[in-house]
Image (cartoon, rainbow, N blue to C red; front, side, top):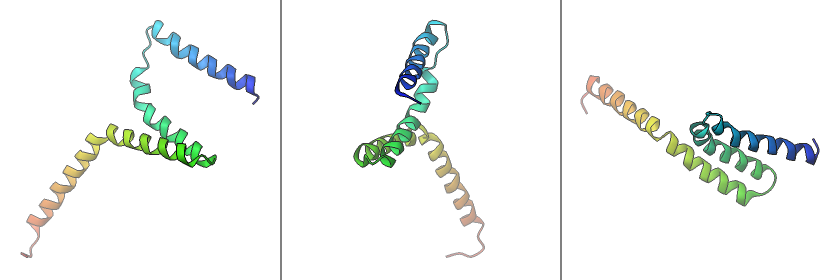
Length: 96
């Protein structure tokens, strides 16, 4: 793909993103959810292309954002693990 095709595709995507809210289609929630994953992907691409500093920063920042997105799920999994472990301690036949 040559440079003009790349610029054309980028302009089409930007124009579509600008036009969609005017048509009543909101992408804010989707973009808000995908942004950390986009940062992770850009960081991996930067890392593979030899730019370790920028790639590492983007991966680190994107990783923190992903963790914040899934913090409720992580806490729920920790709570379930604690309950299961507590039940296994109560049901154990040996007393320590």
